[in-house]
Length: 140
Image (cartoon, rainbow, N blue to C red; front, side, top):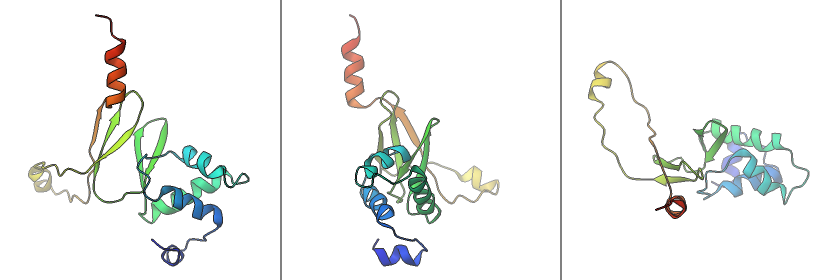
């Protein structure tokens, strides 16, 4: 998205907000607001956490990012708003995108009158790095 498109959405584009947007572009780490704050604050030491949070909420309200609530202790943000799912490591909390189509029969739910407008499925397990640590730490 270019600067003019953000302006059309009512964004006041300060240098700090542009830095937040740039940090999110193509970011696949699903960062928390605090992680974004730490990264952008290096370039803008006077930036407040409130600026990050406000910008994230504006982007979320415009459906330009998705807020993930996979961790009860902190929200994470995903700049990829295309339909996809996630797998979350139970040990290190790393989140990875899954783009496979999953076929689930929801005929009964629709018969009951629900209108499905979106979906999101989360898988939980251990990433290869954590599996290796767990396996290596076991006594035989």
